[in-house]
Amino acid sequence: MNATEQTATPGDDEVPAEHEVPEELSLAGAFPEVTREQWRELVAGVLRKAGRDRLPDPVEDALRRTVATGVSVAPLYTAEDAGDLPTAVGVPGLPPFVRGARPGAAPESGVPAGWDLRQRHAHPDTAVTREAIAADLDNGVTSLWLHLGEGAVPVAALGDVLADVYLDLAPVAVSGGLPAAEALLSLVEGRTDLAPGGSLGLDPLGDQAASGEEQDLSGLAGVARRAPAGWRTAVVDATVFADAGASAVEELGCSLAAGVAYLRALTDGGLPVDEAFTQLEFRYAASADQFTTIAGLRAARRLWDRVGEASGASPDARAQRQHAVTSSVMTTRRDPWVNMLRTTVACFAAGVGGADVVTVQPFDAALGLPDAFSRRIARNTQSLLVEEASLARVLDPAGGSWYVESLTDSLAQAAWAWFTEIERAGGLAAALSSGLVRDRLAAAWDERAKRLATRRDAITGVSEFPNLAEKLPERQPAADLHPTGGLPRVRAAQAFEELRDRADAAPTRPRVHLATIGPVARHTARATFAGNLFQAGGLETPAGDGASGLADAGTTVACICGTDGDYVDSAAALAAELRTAGATQVWLAGKPSLSVDGVDGYVYAGCDALDVLQRVHEQLGVPA
Image (cartoon, rainbow, N blue to C red; front, side, top):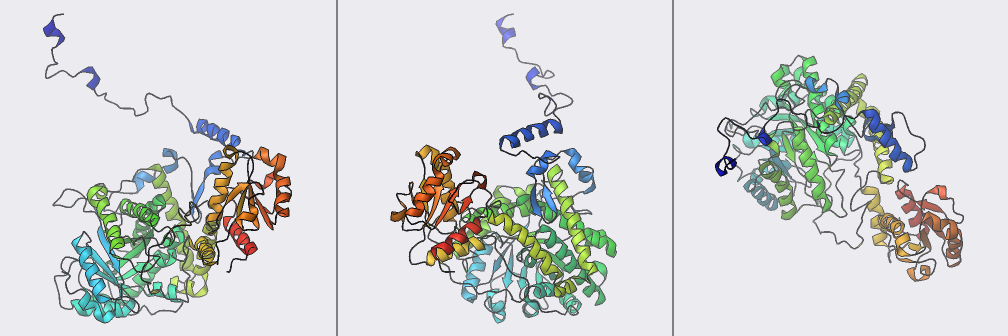
């Protein structure tokens, strides 16, 4: 072979061997085929090594995690778990709308148009609100949500607040009941150039849920006839149920019941079925549990399509318009900067789940009225996901996932069962009055509260990795805009934060002495764990070798930290020494199966951390 032959390149019709593309591509072709049974054997082996002697059948049930009432997720999903679901969800823009209410691309760009970036304003100072609105609209926000009424934007100031807003470009939604709706109607009366997508925000059943006072739905149809073209009259605000502790199942079921009640009121008032459907917008909470949020939004569209089908509505009218709002339940006052991460995940989930409108609450929402910085972060969260992450370029990116399709179906089935239970009870208004909804939501929250108390549902910066030296940002107090007398309002971090507040208010910060055994290498793991747990209740945790540092710590509560081997040799003796040195309560970092004499309790992964902290507070006399 000569030099010319050695350097010759392939001709136009030749393809180098390394670039040849096989007719069929097997993604896992280089790996031996495995079965679910093989995987189960490996899982069982790991669990037994971790001390689990009794295992369920099938073994993966040991790793199941509850995400909503009656709905849990498994650690592994395959095609057999989804069954025929991926082929039964349709395509984007067509019934049953599981894959999205939008049919495809924006004509001018060739890509999906994304979602409406809607930010909420409730500052009572008209000048501040007007300035904040201008900043939002100048920096990517595409619609406005104004809360009108006492403690929020004054109803009479609505015209002044919107004086600089081009209403033909930016839709406006209001909350605040009939006075707010009437104010907005008066402001836009006679105009035919309004941007579509606005909302009058009437939600009488949501008001009943929050206040406990029965509401009249008979006037909905009359207001709907006055609504501008392309606007929605009523909003089914399911966040009132989420804020009361509902899981995704209760939130979806209650939203269906409210939507059906509004349909009845609108059609009884003379509106055709299709027109009644186009008068409703649904508002859901988006949480940092991203897959439950994604599946929940997909399930909601499927369920509402089924309501439309049973009501005789045309397919075009049955697509549910969804407004996703980042959850208030997940928002913390302590270490509020972590809320930026929570709202980012929730916003991501809302976009992937197909929400038409998204609102990101500022990270400091639980502290008071947001400032310019927190509003900027909130709107930029959405702008970055849409414009830079190009999240909206793919329709239903979770579609076809065995996990997501299975979870979507499970949520839909459970929510439909709850919805039909409400209907059998006479509808949502009757179920609210009878206490059926309150009791169901309380049961759902009790289950969640147990996971929070044991830190199975960890709250970063609050129940895990607290920072006792943190300095919270100062914010102007916000008025409580939510009625009282009906369903409660809860936050996941509330119980831990109340303990932190009590400890912070004490004349001197209460302490727990970590009595360590042996060298650092042996006790550091459990000392770190115990310190993290006690600090979640605002308790400082000075450490010392054995009982020697108890007096200097200025406390009468101690926690022994070491290894199981060390405990066998010296934990009981150390507990006695601590008692002699003045300890009135002694804990041990380890499981109760250790059965050490002289200790009052045990702290370990999965223990009721709230109960431990409350007992320590009581022992130390921390004022309630």
